[in-house]
Every structure is written in structure tokens, then in C-alpha cells.
Image (cartoon, rainbow, N blue to C red):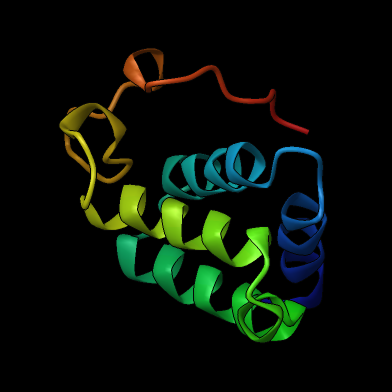
Length: 98
């Protein structure tokens, strides 16, 4: 993860909708050919580098919730790396691409 990517994830994490913005970034990563392993790595890196894990605040919980959607620990419609994932069936509307 380069500094530009890290910055995008940190901005998403510190937004008014960290879960939504992080999911959006992960969906865009997948569309660009990124893998589930990369997504997990990015989220763990952001958790560590942001201090969210140590702060144990809502940001850390948002990262854990996104990790559930990355790894399939959620309903099938929310599993981002499922073969048949369709954002239109995601349980909530996500923020637009920025």
C-alpha cells in the first residue's frame, strides 16, 4: 500500500461514514483487480497505522465490520468478494466514488 492509497483509506476511516466509505474503496479495489487478501491487508494496515485498534473507538469497529464483508462473515448479498456480488443488493446505499 503506497502513501496515496493509505491516505485515501485514512480519509475514509475518519469520515462521517467510515463503514460506507471503506466498503466503497474495497469495491473499487476489487473492480481494479484487487484480491480478498489485498483487501484484508489494506484494512489491517489502516487499522494499525491510524491508531484505531489501540483507541478501540468506533473506527476500529467499522474496520471489523468491513472485514466481515470482505471475508464472507456476512449475508451472501454483502460478501464483496463473492463471485456474484452486486452492489445493488448490498444491504444499504453506499457513498459515491470520490
